[in-house]
Every structure is written in structure tokens, then in C-alpha cells.
Image (cartoon, rainbow, N blue to C red; front, side, top):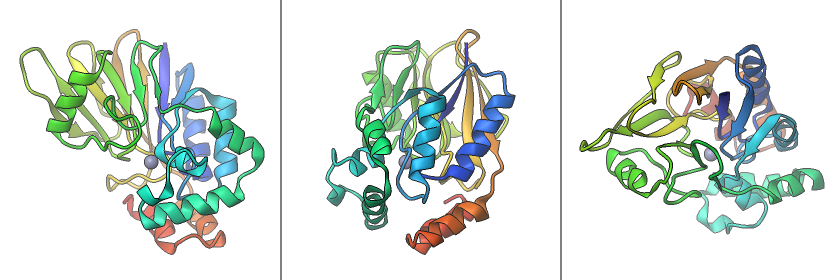
Length: 243
Ligand code: ZN
């Protein structure tokens, strides 16, 4: 089975729709989402509705948990807490009840799915080989999918070696057939790896091949929606820089 992996949508409908179009044109059979449907962006209801319709699996991210009151907003940065409060006051009861059902990890597939990391599914940003090492020790699946850092990357470890990793460019293919892996598709709605295009990943669970993807979208439209909602201007500006 070929699966499209998306993560960190963050209320960016423009980016999510563009990625869903690209997935539709691909050979993927299903779409799985690693969480953070809401937070930062101005169209949380639209993003949750798209996830409800198209995601075969959807995790909860820390922002989803914050918005539904399962995490104290004091643990968030100032801008993130402000956006979470705005989202709480904006979303419909249907959106709220969808978010209420989501969990930050899912173990029932051939790969492990975590919003943040196998040892801390809610908060850990896996960005260093040492952290990857500890996560690979903790995971029960050989291959795990993680989001949260908004950086398209992979870490891997083969027998007797220590973990190493790298950021991943669009079109890059990764052979997952051997070794242990942590794979991050990057962020759909707020990339932070310097490439402003929406990030996602194609994963073939039969041949164990992954391909990193990037999709152009209407960044100006997403930024205009953030400004119209009177969310912090920095949340609109950063989209153009992919930071
Ligand atoms: Zn996120």
C-alpha cells in the first residue's frame, strides 16, 4: 500500500487543499496525518473538515490538545498560546468534537505513528542524532513517522552503528528496507526548513521506499487570512520564508 503522510497543517487551508490535490494526482491509496490540524493559521474549521473527510488515520498534536483544553496553554510560546485561544473561540462544536477524539500516537500499523517522538508523542522535537538514538531505542516498530519539528528529515541506524540523520530535499527517495528509521515529512501549513512550499511524503509500505514531496500553494492567500483574523502579523510573515 502507498500512503501519503502529512503533518502540522496548522489551520492553513490553502496549503492543505494544494497538498490534497497533489495526493489525489499521486498513486497513494490513503492519507495519514500526524497531527496539529489547528494553531497558528486562520482556517481551523476548514482544515479539520478536510482531515475528517480524507484522513484514514489522524493524530492529535500539541496544538490540537492545547485548543481542546487537554494541555495548559502556559506551556506554549506566547504567539502559539494566543493563536490557540483565538482558535478555541472560533471553532465550531463539530471541529471541537473531532479534535476531542484524536490521540498523539497510533501503533496499529506496520509503522509507528507519533506526533512528536516515540518517547514523548506530544512535545519532543527530534532534531539531533543523540535524541534520535534515544527514540530509536524506545520505539517498537522498525520505522516510525514523526512530525512536530516542521522540518523534512530522516534519522536512521543500522546494526552496530550510531544514529545519523539529515534534512531531506523535494524528490529525494529514501530506501527504508533495512535498519531503523525516524521519518519526518515536514509541515504542510508552516514549514520551518527554509522552503516555504507545503511538505509531505509518499511512503510505499510494500517496497519500503519513501519520497519527499513539496507542493506550491497560495502563500499570500494564507497570509491574508491570518491578517484578516487579526492574528499576530509574524504568523503571516513567516510563511513566505518557510520559518
Ligand atoms: Zn506543529
